[in-house]
Image 1 (cartoon, helix red, strand yellow):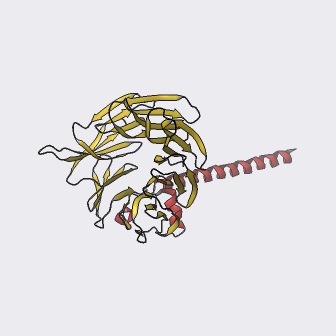
Image 2 (cartoon, one colour):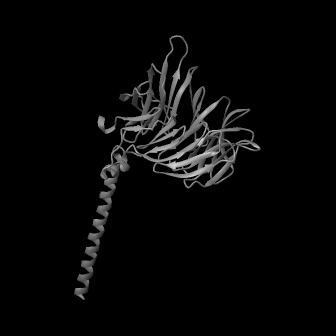
Image 3 (cartoon, helix red, strand yellow):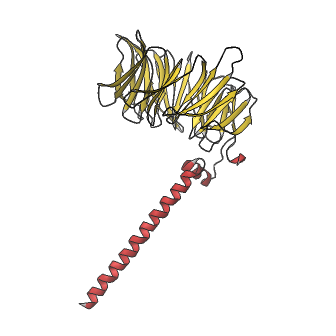
Length: 375
């Protein structure tokens, strides 16, 4: 009897030791993931370095005149006149999709992107590493947006209505459609997997409509008497851009704050879930150009004066990138300068990468500045 008791005690001791080792391994792995995720570029950059892959600092478009470009983490999507060119992190072409459109446009978020025929009927949906699907609209396309989970919102005209929105999931399957009645649909955004925000314009001005993808009932709406031109979901609700102001709304589209431009002209803007950045110009004698950043709650984070008009701006993880002439400047969210680079090759677009570097894109080429090379 004593021997059996000793054997059971030994088994329990071995099991406890095994369990402790497993818990210790899980804890160490969690610490490892946390440390890697804090590195510039995160886990994806770590595995790329582990495999010995190099990240390109130059991209060339093979003499294809470009219509639009978007940095997608360490890859680059180029919507040229002749087709879509997707470059992998090494600077090589991952895939192409040729088309013959009159007016193409590009939308991207995270690993997903879409190039579409404005006024046409086709949307090419893709990920960084492959083409996903080709979406066909029965009506002329007005605009397209993509979120970082791969949901696509296609705004189009429609028979019997002034406009409609169709939402597709990451598999390219149409999962929701909403028609706008007597208003024209300008744009739409999908938040996560369950909410749709639509911007329309009609006789009463601009209107935002909030819907859930599992219901046909309207959840909330907000009407602005002037012209609203864009919007974004934020961590506290919604930020809308009008020609005269920024408007902060709650998650139910209740007006919370307004940042009036005070007669200044809106030259450029960029929105994220935490920050809104606007470039404003005062045409009066002695006036100037300012760039201002605001938090999602409406608080002013910073303001700077610029001599040249921004050609493009981008926001990522608390960093703001501004392209002016032949100069790319990176700021904190409070618009304190952290880095600046000369890019005198005719750059027109700028994107921030996960490691803090920026990629500036021109007509035939793109160059990467900053990152680890600059410390």
